[in-house]
Length: 395
Image (cartoon, rainbow, N blue to C red; front, side):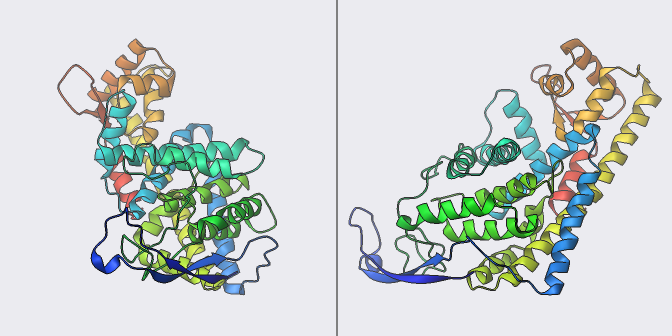
């Protein structure tokens, strides 16, 4: 691993306003990472142990997969996407976002930041779908994920396109001089992205090791003007799904990374300093914690659903094929639900769903969010409290 620096001179662009102290030529060093082709990895025994434990935790989580748990899989994916946005400083609380999602699915507009985070969920789902069916990951796949990711970001630059100019992290807004990190010049991107995709399509390394290296390499290349972190964290889930390690349940790794942001950024820095083992240890430990957190959450949601079923039995005990039971099964994916969402989620008719929602409201399982008879929605009792705990990595 590692790389080299190339010294460049930044010439002032007179078309861009800048304070006087920035209107001069200055030099900077751009970092060009070594290609991943033919990479040989030798890790200390203790780091390999942490890596193996993390992969086992993901495998154990996915062994619990069953058709009736599909809504929970969607919610874990949703949580990963939200946390990935949180790493970038976008903060929307769980209830606000859940209500925004129900509003958006009902065909109405939502706030800019909520729309952007919901787009991040769409991008993550797109990434997983592509990973499941594509023969190989290519540059176009990365562009497509990025395009969806920034679809609702009004200030996004070049959504779905690799950058054609120098970018940098830290320092000032006008030139890369004094920046904390300067990625490769744009003319290097073509070969670096091609090399990264080739690495992602190989299966020589353990899946989680491959995902950790690919993520750090994409972060180092920084191929987009915006949205590199979220795209890179989506790439992790692509690799884990392609390699068969997480066929059903996504470990919400970004939940842990968001809570350890300084450690996460420090890990990416040591990766660039050719201290691979340190980065792998940080990433693997976060992944193991995420998988264990998700498994605890899976158990809590199953317990909550069983309590809902008992409440429904005590209140009205409808027939076994009643829509109310199907709505309970679908609620983990939709903590805020309305009639159209419930119809799609359960495959039941509108009258059946409306009757089921009435029964669930009477049993105290669905809490109405307004008294209006138009665009009505309900919150699943107790579920958002569990989601908040999961997103805060409390389990």
